[in-house]
Length: 252
Image (cartoon, rainbow, N blue to C red; front, side, top):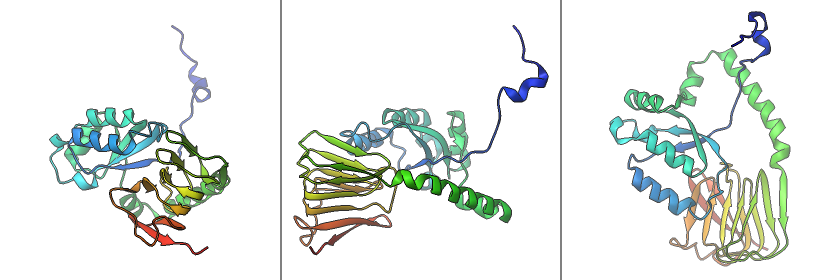
């Protein structure tokens, strides 16, 4: 076995700081069977909804519970089945964090706590870096996909990294997904999922709002809760206000 020369170590690898966009999975239960059922109901019809996105598990809602109620190996396996890649955990109590580390997860600091503790000069550097990243990502987010044909039941369209414009009817059983906003200049009768990667500024527009499901950045509504009469079957837009979907009629 040969070893690399000690004077050539720097040529073999480098360690540099990097920023990474993570999906925050806010865990609200330690009941893994119930969680599996809920995720299957929400994402079972869209197996490609995620694309092995890196995830930080947020334990804010469970930090007062005993660590025994969180089975991290089972949770990690469950998230991976839905094409999510858990990499870290945050906001848990000491016992939960220790159990998460034992399961191979890293510790991600709470963003507000980290910002409060960091020196002012460091905060300024981070802000500059984020602004620089946004400038790079904006052109990608402006990508628009245009669909001219009707979508039948079972068909799925995903506009990755941008908006989706559909000029024909989206029938029952069809599914339209976009990282940005969704515009349907025809009846929307299937499922519409905007802000698929967490864009809370995304919106859903249709000239005839009759959807099976609406979702913006993870906040969703199904036909079990009918739309208000002022927007059902009419031109309307759907937007997100905090964690609440807002329905507004559009005058044409």
